[in-house]
Every structure is written in structure tokens, then in C-alpha cells.
Length: 387
Image (cartoon, rainbow, N blue to C red; front, side):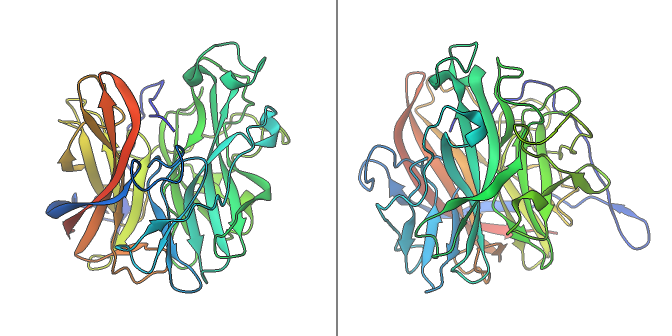
């Protein structure tokens, strides 16, 4: 999976959270400070089963029916790190899900990364997949020669009924797609990308997914929700007033560009993770951003807070670093795919944090101006304060 860069200006739109008295409130930015040494969770040079095992998505995890942890954070040959605790994870070499590399875009079966999981009982596990149709690798499917110009992305639903030993796509897997087929608007990457982890307020399940946009739809990050994870067609995107927008399968359904989903400020690109900060009750998002001399004075890992997942605080820097969205030339290393995980989380899906947690990062080594497959998944303890 590669960096996602917007093709159009990101709409800056801020929703105000209204209290019972009608007073508009925007949360203060969270303060997240590094408070411990770095630990290596997975080293692709030492811990891999083969060359596919490199950190390439934000970590997603849950406790299975036996109480053991399963964590996904690697490549499109999807394997889980498993263990009794977060400090004892080892890679299981069994592939639990993979795409078949099919040339038919309507099959939604090219390359797939497990990008989100959620389970109530540890046995039935629902998941979201970042699916790349790489038309440049299928003769006759793209008018351009390069990967980026031919990349068409969808978010698909998968399910496991054996605690995650194997996953399969649901019968109608498309959760979010551009409202046109892959041959339209070639020359840039298109669609929905990189869903966050799934979180719940007890009734609704939520995730945020990024889009590069199309005519009438700004690029940015959009909020989705569903009340039924078993029905992949039940996800709806937020339009600024309600959750009304269904992004269906343009190869089987009559889909036309309609109302735009609201792109959430301050996110310039995919959000790494969502967690609820238990002491304050607010949501925290962590994400990477490139320096823009405006909202982001330096490139790095940032955080924002929200009371309702719709209206977000201004960004607060956690770690200055070059990321996947920066020029890699001369960087040496890049940090990407930030995720906040509290090892003491009370929820099975690690949706909550206390006053401390671990910030997980994928660290990529750069040679000259080229990304390499020499990557490590690292974590560092942080302290969290939210007003």
C-alpha cells in the first residue's frame, strides 16, 4: 500500500458540537507526550515468514474467544501476530485472507489488506479490507502504464466464524466505492482508502475512510456508520446533516455521483486510529500529516479530539518526523500508520484508552529516494491529557 495524495484541494469544513443550551463547542486539542523508550514489535528482517511480511497498515487487534490477542498490521498476504499479551506477539505463518489477483474489476479480488476488525464474542469477527484494483498489472485494463494512475480502491467487508483463522468476503462485499467503475477518470488513484479501526458507542459502529474525491466530492476523510456489521450494505456516510449516503457497487448497481460526504477537518489524509479516552469520554484520532505552513507547521504524527466523531479539535503534534506523504529523498527512515493502543483497554477490540497508551508506528527505511521493504513495527509509551 502506498501513500495517498489528494488530487484536489481539501475542503475545510468544521461542524460545531452543540450542547443542550445551544452553545457551540469545539474540543481542545489533546496533549499526547512520549513517555518511554521505543520497543520493536515486529522486524521484517528477523520475524517474517516470507517477503510479504512487512508492516503496511495501521495495527488492528482484538481478543479472540480464548482470550488471546490477534493483531493484523502487515501486507496483502494477510497473517496475524498472535500471543497472550501485546508483549508476547509472534507471527503465525498461516495466511488467513488474500486476494486472488483477478483481472475482472467486478470480482473485487485483486490485492487486499485487512484494515479493520471488530468482534463481540471473539469468534465471529467482522472486518474491512483496503482493496486495490491495480489495473496496470492487468493487460488492457488501463490506458496508463503506471501503478498510481491505474489504482482504483474500494473498501470491502469480510467475515470470520472461527476467531480469525480464516476470513471470506461477504456476499455483497462493497462497503465504499467511487460511484463509477475503474476505467473512469484514469490518470490518478481513485476511490475510498484506508479505513480506521471500527469503534462503537453501543448502538452504532463507526469508521473513518479517506477518499481522493471526484467532481462534486472533495478529497479528505469521511465518517461512516452502521448498526449491523453483518450487513455490508448498511454502512452510510455522513453528509454534514445525517448518515444518508450509500456508496455501492458501480459494477452491479445504478450509481451516480450524488451528495458529497463531509470531509472532516483537520484530517488531510487517512486517519490512523480512533480510540475513546475513558477519563474524558472524548474520542482521539491519530494520523500523519505533511508540513503545509498552515495547519501543520512540520511534518509528523498528529492527534485531534472529538466529542461526537463529527467535530474535531485543531491538530496537536505528537512526533515530528517525515512520513509517507513527504519526499523520501535523504530521509533515511520514515514513520507512518500511527495507531494508539492501550494494553490495559477494557474493550475486546481495544477501542478505549486511559491516561497512558502505546503509540504504534511503521518505520520504513529509505535508500536514496526509494522506499524499501526493510520495515519495523515499533511502539512507544505516551501520556494522554484531554480537556
